[in-house]
Image (cartoon, rainbow, N blue to C red; front, top):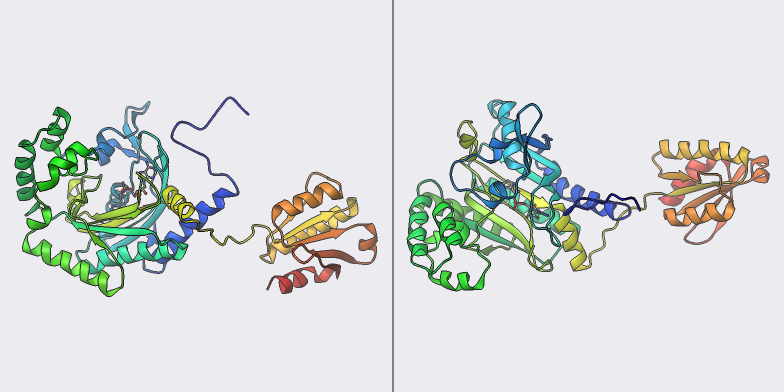
Length: 420
Ligand code: HAM
């Protein structure tokens, strides 16, 4: 082992487990790709002000957990803690919203960074696949996104997750509720930190995990009772659309999200096998964010699903993904002449779209067959001088143990036939 280890709160993705991460990313992306979402990639860091906007209600993600730093050139940057602000920034910068085709639908996949206290399911470097639909206010769009996340999880075989749904109101009704909640909180017996939080971001106090706090919150006013007619109607429509699609959800009037930009629809996908870090994904509407970062009014909605936690959820449910074996054919040459011939055959197989590998490193038969076994290949190709003299190689089916000669120029077809 070297003296270096992965930094605290991070881990490496290595084979064979890494294959599951790829499969999860692909499964989440698949429904987006067939729903009009285009792929977007943005830098791993941004100007810090994009995230720390200094207006509105601050959150831990931005105030405490951000990897912010100054460059040698004096720029103040931050490793991205989330994708929404970056994607919106990029869409505005490229004027995608002016192309006359709203909503602009984008999906992304990448690494995000939060300086959190690490524990199972909570890392300082983690991976999300996300989707944003920018520039349309339409309950069907909110419903579409929730259905797509639901479909992604179901396609992976996940069953024990729940969808929590709430509305956070808009700039009409939320301030009224906020004031009412603050009034209520001021009357409680809370520590100084929590009281301070109540002044800055009172909704976050509802999320306090401590029992003593939760007890006092029992009679707290609920946002649902303060929603204006427009927000109420919008939320009802989202709920109806989900119900019509057969997507089960739970109304959670206390659901607050960890980012400051949400309006109206908010939701979280929680998995019951994950302990305290139970949110496998979440999102919602952010109708005011574009203006907050200097753009025009562009009501938008999106989500991000955590890849790390989705993999943990699969484990918790005992779901094993059907991953195609990475190698279908493994070639074992016996002797120099066979090395040259089989190396060429491996290349031919690969070009024909068949995953093939080769016993590198000049091992003997025993060592090479061990490699073949480990590769998980369904077939091995073994050839020695005598085989080559006859113009054949030995094709062995590792499942049945059957073995027989195949003409050199018929290998690709023979393998393809047997794999089909
Ligand atoms: P978020 O709820 O902060 O939302 O993160 C989304 C998901 O990322 C979480 O549900 C969780 O699965 C995963 N995640 C977050 N932090 C960590 C961590 N420290 N370790 C492992 N996994 C983590 C957002 O990021 C919003 N940008 C979602 C969104 C898109 N809203 C609108 N559009």
